[in-house]
Image 1 (tube, rainbow, N blue to C red):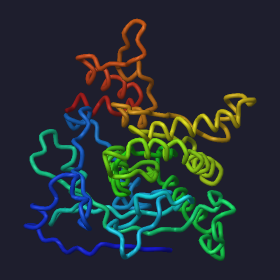
Image 2 (image 1 turned 180 degrees about the vertical axis):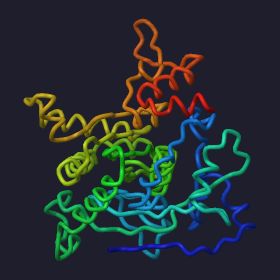
Image 3 (image 1 turned 90 degrees about the vertical axis):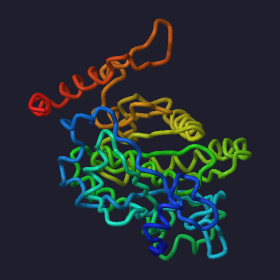
Image 4 (image 1 turned 120 degrees about the horizontal axis):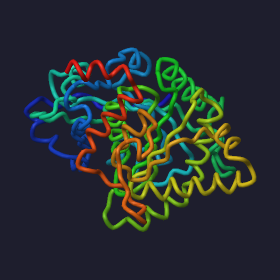
Length: 349
């Protein structure tokens, strides 16, 4: 197993200067983002995604699984973990995520992150990775045998074991796969996926899928070409998750250029299964929610509610769903209907 860690060299004063926004990717400085604001539906405190502490016992919540078909970085690279270049094969591993701020733990962050008017910043960064190795089924005849090791299926088995151990301690036996947009480095999808998983209460399994985009505004066309051409690997990855894990449902989130990657992947799967019934396809692939540039993502994933059930409205002859003025009230009512145990908590609050 390949391990890469970043030592904690930054004191509080340096962090205050360095960890300002996501632009901290220049040179070899750790890339950070600030923990996203709490979703509005959690504002009054009655609905708490962290009530089930058992969901964080396996695969601790300072680590998140990832899959990437980027080239690994070496000592001469500015990239800390993976380069912004196409790597061909799909690599599997776990990334360690750290709050880049002194004197705060993840337990404290769970409570603070739900505050409506959070006055302080909570930057998070990837502090290291543990790579299991190459997903054997993603290898092509051009791949050197030594890349797969003595046991070619070892990485796939270890990754599936990590998923299954987490699913056993989760209420929702679901896997969530997040695919990022263009112009980002490896750490970006890892941290964004970690944010989304944080506000899902660390239930189920979230996976960051880091395809080889390029952190340059001039690389859009190249990234689009990569997103379309590398759909094979995402398709293989989804098939692997369905076949070798105990997940009941697999949800896919595509953002920006990542939507093209997801769309082409689904196209391939549709062509391969065009003669089969929908029930048979779901039984094998387990793909459920597919969200492309969604806005109320977390509640969709947490409760499986349709747009109408979540309180969204759509104009006549319009394909676009919109947020009405009373969206939060509608959403709370829908959540109570889906989870009646919350009704008493809301009334007491």
